[in-house]
Image 1: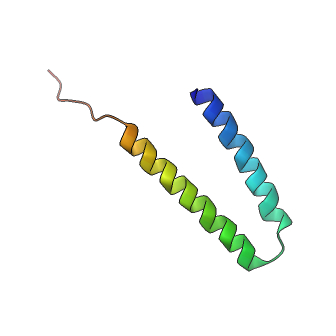
Image 2: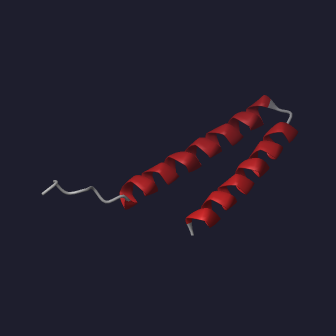
Length: 58
């Protein structure tokens, strides 16, 4: 499943890059950047929530 996630993220990143450079207006490019940041932040939060803290070494 992790390999599929990596592949999907790569494809989405390439598409986002293509759209970014196809857009001419700076304001719209800024919206794309803000959207990408929000998505990355939410993914980081989900990843942090899913990682279980390790207990003390015994």
